[in-house]
Image (cartoon, rainbow, N blue to C red; front, side, top):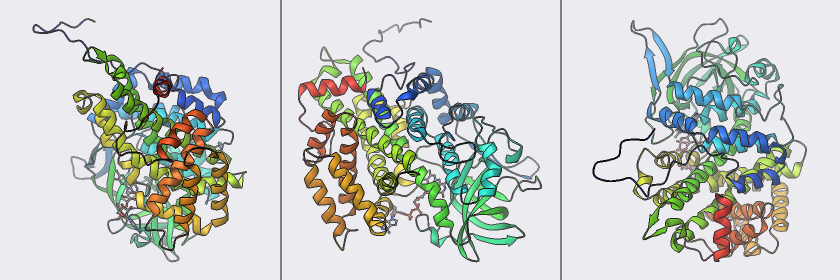
Length: 547
Ligand SMILES: Cc1cc2nc3c(=O)[nH]c(=O)nc-3n(C[C@H](O)[C@H](O)[C@H](O)COP(=O)(O)OP(=O)(O)OC[C@H]3O[C@@H](n4cnc5c(N)ncnc54)[C@H](O)[C@@H]3O)c2cc1C
């Protein structure tokens, strides 16, 4: 429908909306990274997903779900407790679309075993595309998928829940999980006095027959309308992991009392609660005293998803920036044809291309870890390094993407303001930056041989790339230092850059050469575009990023 024009002026030289695109087909670096890591056969499935999630209708759902934030309904009109969170229908639709595509479970078989093949890579490509549209709802999606790894420590519970977790239905009803068509799971670890330091958890677990009663609180517990939560609490033998459902086995509402919802910078479509447990029913997962060992299986997977989502956010920033620059003219020339803007956009494209190659390489290690010790070692050492590097880059990257749109980038009608507010959270939750660096050091000291084998592998994969040899020497020297904590950020960043160069070399060697020349052989300047790439390389990078 044509809109009535303004009396005073015509609207022109504004870019059209970037929507109704196939998010897979327009992203050659994604397709190449998926193919290089075993997922080539899924091209059609991913293209269907990309078309659907790239539609204007899905973008609109994302906007509406973030503008109409969840509301906590603590009591009913008569003063009875409700402890329910209401979401806008758009949020439920996003959840249903992700569940329908198996983003919450497709890396598992119906029995809760790793699905094998390239399940991780294919699902990651979907997660990456969905993150370009709406990230808040991905919080319960990622936690549900990851919870299976921890439930594996309690085979009877895994067997009972898998028939409901493994369906592709989303069922938002507030009802006992065993009566539902599909279920979601959350995680409660962080308390007021300590998040990273979960050993300081004060929440108590007391035996009650075969089950437990949990009393205490959690300071952050996201997605409170999940059907069950994996929570940490102190039992007789120490910190233990529990499965706490919203309904007790007799069908009564479990004693999970939400205090309030967090008022967050971003991630607004998702609810994050403060909660008290007043003798809530729960069953144990794994042994008493082994709570961290149990829940870390879940956390490893949510860390992986943080990196995938941050890469997706950056991809979206790049695509919107490039799209705009190709339509917007300044001084009689499209922005995309101005040499200085080309320098910025191509440098950003190189960063995203390396990030997606690295993330997909990591997902391949998750696919193959069950059978291949070398891949398990890669996964162990590099998950924290990659989460650190990819997630911490996202806020700065999105700021630059926003600036490419000028004032239009800064306003809430566009998606970049939302992406920008979302970007820091992936670095903060599931282990903040320093905690990731310490985790790399832990892997190096506890599984030194496996870690050295990974470094050796990376050495072979980056042979001849500019600056790779020096980077390897630097990493080795830094991690051998007695005060390695002091230099852990420099060394972990170098390790991630090296792994990115290696991953990119397996996808597109020329881009790996450019990446190594600008990030390994030289320290990259603090701003994007402060690099000297040849004209051909600039054109090639931009054409690959958005044909
Ligand atoms: C939106 C949102 C949703 C969340 N949802 C959940 C949820 O569903 N479930 C849940 O359990 N938690 C959740 N969290 C909590 C989150 O996981 C924690 O906030 C995070 O792990 C950091 O813990 P903390 O806040 O206690 O900070 P702290 O542990 O106090 O850390 C503060 C800073 O100190 C650094 N630090 C910690 N230890 C060291 C050290 N030894 N050396 C140097 N530096 C160190 C950290 O890197 C961090 O930068 C959520 C958080 C947010 C923001």
